Amino acid sequence: MDINFIFKIAAIGIIVAVLNTLLIRSGRDDQAMLTTLAGVIVVLAMLIPQISELFRSVRELFNL
Image (tube, rainbow, N blue to C red; front, side, top):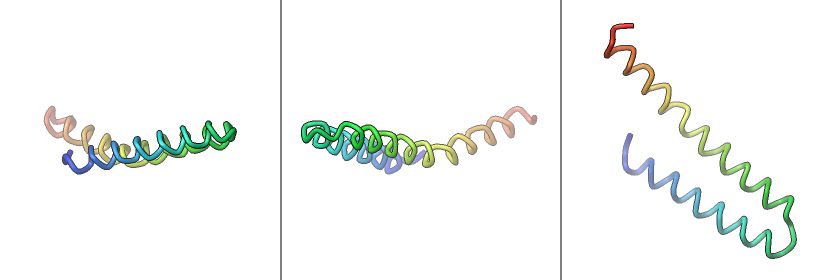
């Protein structure tokens, strides 16, 4: 896992947090929740290949 990957996840988190705060203060609670959900889905989509690589490495390490 590269440090740039961690920075990308942190940047997405910061952007989602700012958008969430702005939307809640403007009275759009439903859109704020959808924005947060979209951010979580994007980060999970980024993490799935990394988790797959981790499992592949563990299988190779233990010859499974």
